[in-house]
Image 1 (cartoon, rainbow, N blue to C red):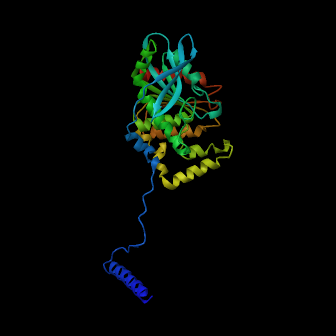
Image 2: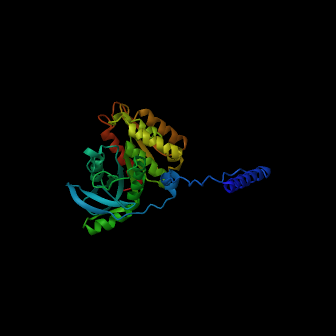
Image 3: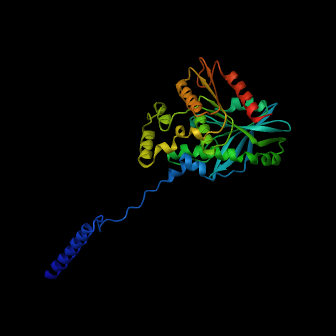
Length: 339
């Protein structure tokens, strides 16, 4: 027993001497019992807008599925591509007849998964574009249509849409091989690609323009243009749980990440494309003041932007704006993509 007390005494004396020496030499006192804490992994860092702009996002082969419509001037197909190893479906409209056609990439707004079918949110406009000599592609995004499931993390699922959108844009150059193998007479010019985005699809379009820095002429209908997470929280009263789960996910995200690095409003200066914005004054999903503010910010940065408002028109530019907006969009693409 005496021996044990003696050993304990010597240990305590040793630690006392250690701490005294640390203090004497004005060093930080180190707790010898404290283990090193491993830095917390941050897998969502890769989705920061600046990091996505530096990432290598590879093109994918595009394959065709069933014919959805065979009209006089165009044919509609289900198409498939892969984004980060996951299959994504979508709707492709191809004008009939030989020719080299420009491409319009279409990004839809929010649609409930239970009622979604390929083309919902883009089909009507896409058909008008196809009848007038444009190939159109509308991605379904992960979790929709025949696409693979997205991340179980609801925040990452949102960010995956950007990679999906950039991937399908990068894949336009593979369309001619797809058309050739399917005996389709049309061809596309991979140098003549525009974007059309509605509602949340407008938000995706703006973010893609920031990520790529490419001059894709872009038409935006009632774009969601407010910063994340306000742009999401604004709509949570429509959820079954009033947004409780989503607010928790966002709070957890903000604990670990600098949310300003993911906000499209902080990167408007990276946009190098001509823009055409359309907004209904009676829109109850995207307030007109959002688009007013967006256009003002873009003009302040000397961006090339046209802005049209439609008195009495709703979120889909009905009843006073739809036909005129489509006509203006075709004129815009004709001017910026050429014949």
